[in-house]
Image (cartoon, rainbow, N blue to C red; front, side, top):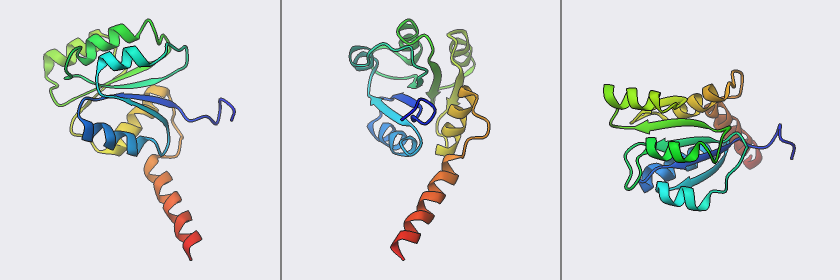
Length: 147
């Protein structure tokens, strides 16, 4: 598979198992997804890379919060894009996240198509097939095969 057709790598760092699984199941239809439940395991397991990875990082986690984690990831992943997700956004957190250099902020709860659009936005993808359209197309293909 060439670099042009390889799925975009996405790393989810979300301590809520259900939210983590929901994001994984939605995003794996379009992206190459790796999931972690905390900052410590992300830093311990994920090998450094110059690849353009997108990190979806929850703010409120045990141990390091999402802003602290991003600070530790940047030297290991210099070409990455970072999206902070949180149900706690207020003026102060928004300012801190912007000062930390996050590429995007997404308040929880959010609809799954919203996160896909935000990923495409931070990557500069303007005309990619939306994940909703991809799911519909795949479902139509399955229906055609069953008949």
